[in-house]
Image (cartoon, rainbow, N blue to C red; front, side, top):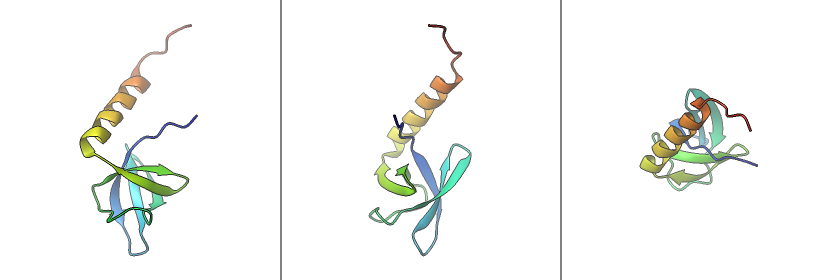
Length: 77
């Protein structure tokens, strides 16, 4: 199973490679599949490619939800 977490583009070079921040961890990804990628855009990344942009409000909500899930104490089954 794969969970898609949005990341924020923090830099783009002339070869359409971008640095994407995932809450303090960054990765270099290709943004060549996107229409007009820009610094500040939130994107979903898979296999080294940004697949699509995400609405900033939706991205922030998803990031907050994931953080709250990860910070919850584990529950015994």
